[in-house]
Image 1 (cartoon, rainbow, N blue to C red):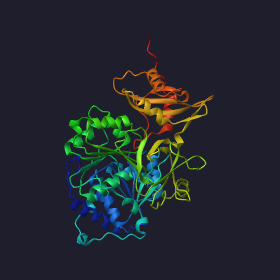
Image 2: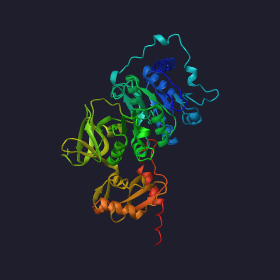
Image 3: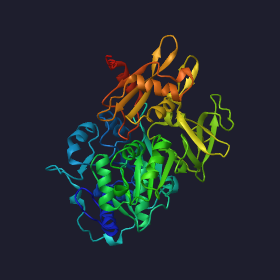
Image 4: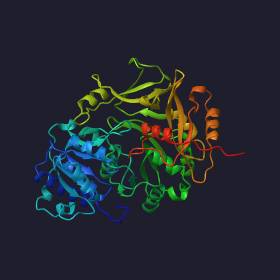
Length: 491
């Protein structure tokens, strides 16, 4: 169902449209050796393209249209799709970015004159009823999709997804459920949500509109959504909003979130709003899929128990295995083959070592009950007066302040001591929160001197994030350095 225009489509209608797309791909000579570009906001037609590609065993490369032009150009220069499906408003941009190989471009909505549209492909065919999906040449290890890494430390990478990885679908929704996700198809979770709801017979709601608390409350109320997938920052925004009330959200039975940290306090507040709802934190990466799951997290940093088929080792900088409650890099081993980053064997080798361990750069530890905790990103580890700390642990303290809407802690170079912690903060409307109040709160909650806000606080209107809401700390650091301190109030 489309929230934007009320269009309702049955699974039978979606199947028919997907078959016609698959037949078109075949007529164009596309096979498993080619790629199809998909860059569009969530819409019913996007489902047709995605399923059509799967039926024809032609990998689709989904890219978020909100990415910077440089990132879109770099990603499609790697995979060079022979055909691209896009929104009409992005046609001229994609035509310019792909002029070196000139793929066929087809619009999904807002059609452009003399440019093929998806409507041209959906007419009835005599052979549709007898269609059989293309058999896989490489079995479960065949690449079926290409999605994007987070790109928090540079340009996103093109991550291959195999057929076996796509088949790892949790049976969490059923025929009585209404499913909604804010994620785009450049995220593996959105693809899994589509496949799961289709196979389990659940109703799925889509919307092209950008995320807002008002939008998601409207969707949940109007369609009586029971299963909802959110990114971490969206979870934070929703459940710290005055719109998050039992009246607005009572239909929700299952809320899943991932992609970054959510304070246990925010989860507990959400539980008080809709008491019978399950809140599920999923820790994973695009490359490995889900790693661990925690239901109703009650402790900070906890991401729960490992999923079946997953092995995790906590290692120090020398690669030695660490004991319980010792923080180190999280190394991951799955029971799935991974075909690496498309066209980037060097980066693939850095991520997946010769023994099959993924080095994703997360820091964490196991407690005595073998529950996994995530502390921060290894590359975000900071050092002040020879002592290490992570920005995440200070952010968790600052977000406790009721006047704080968003926060990002960065390390500002101090010529004597190293990385002095500084906080970028977006205050809630009409707030008069001061720098000194924030500094005092951190000092009260964290006893050690090297984790204090020695670089101070900057109040800003925005904090840089990527298209999926993940913090861009390098960009945040530059904003911090170029933003003036708020003047102290006169006495």
